[in-house]
Length: 219
Image (cartoon, rainbow, N blue to C red; front, side):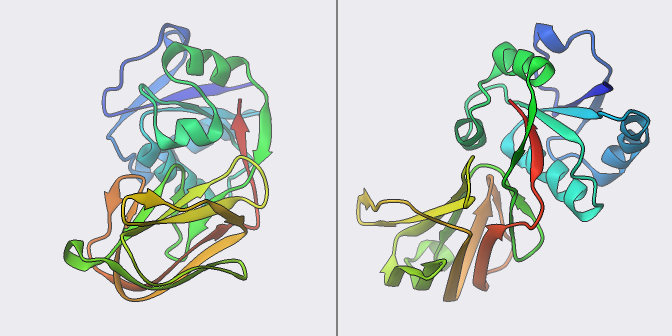
């Protein structure tokens, strides 16, 4: 098995990963860097890529693998500190996560993307424009999540099927999570923050849903 580490933004390297071949990249890996690694990984029948970084780094890698139809690559995730993604996928952090990424078994895991073609790893937060309340109507599959105004809508992947869950904040309380295959919002205008990366422009709608293919997460 060929295992390679993608070290994002100078993240500290756990001892367990120190001897593995490593490629340095930015906090959000450039697609050109990922493309350079793919032929190396393709030379092995069981390629494994370990992403050392934050949720947004892994999201960028998975988005590129999805778009280039390379979701067969086994993926290990090693965040330095706890993230939404590390909690969702129960990877652990630091050296414990590194050992799991090396020694663990890859299992099919629901891959969550949105209608812009970007993968979600940890958490998406949808708010109103200019810090106003979020106005609109949202559904998880055929269950109405809300209609009217709320503080924010939160979407997250799940480790199990159907794959995605959503909740809203109204006042200081957060309602229960509702699970489904897709979470859809229609709104006069909203701002979407995916894995900590905020959209440049307001959007009139947003949908997060389970991709027709899974990804292979090492746990």
